[in-house]
Image (cartoon, rainbow, N blue to C red; front, side, top):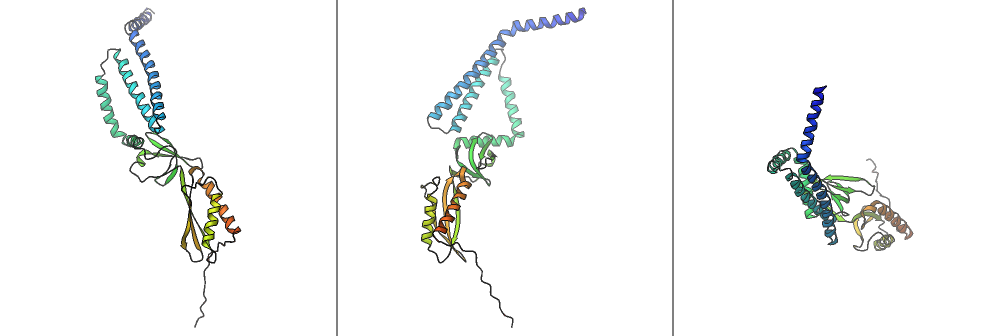
Length: 274
C-alpha cells in the first residue's frame, strides 16, 4: 500500500513540476496557435474577397486565399514551437526527407496536384464553362488541386483527375453547346422554303441565342432526299431538352408548310432468266 502511495506521489510531483516548468510555455503556445488560426482564416477571406472584387476568377482567388492561410499558419507554428526552446532545424530536415520519400510513393496523387496548380494558374477553363475531355462532357462545377468536377444535364457528377486534363486536347464551349442535326426533304420541294421554315421554327425557342445565329443550309444530296443541315447553340444544362423541343417544332412546321420528308427509297429490278 505504501509503495502504491509513493508511486502516485511521485507521478503527482512530476506533473506539478512539469506544469510549473512548462505550463506558461504550453499556455502561450496554445494561445498563439488559436490566435494565429483566427488571423489566418480572416486574412485568407480578406485576400479572396479583394481578388474577387477585382473580377479575378473565383477558383484562382480561393486558391491564393488558401495559400495565404497556409503561409500564415506555417509562421504561427514555428513561433509556437519556439516557445518551448526547440530548434526547428531538425524538423525542417525531417520534413524534407519525408517529402522526398513520399514523392516516390505518391507520384500519382502529386502529379494530380501539380496538374491542378497548372490549371488554376493558366485558366484554360473556369467554373461554369462547358468542357469536353477524354470522351466526357459537362459543365465545370469545381476545380480543386487534385481533380476537376463536371455536372451533366441529368445531374450526374463526373470527377476527372487533373493529370488526365493537362496535356490533353480540351474543347471549351463556355456556357453553351452546339446541336447538329439533319433533316431530309423531297427533291420536289423548295429547299429555300424549307430553310426559312426551319429558321422560323428555331426562332420560337427563346433559349436559342441569335448570336451566334443558327446555321441552316443544304448539307448533302442524298439518294432520296435533299439533306438540310442544322447547327445552333443551346445552354449546356438544357441541351437535350431544347434539342427535342426544336425537333418537334421543326417537324410540325415542315408539315404545315407542306414540305415532305420522304422515306428512303430503293429501286429493285427483276431480270428474267434467259
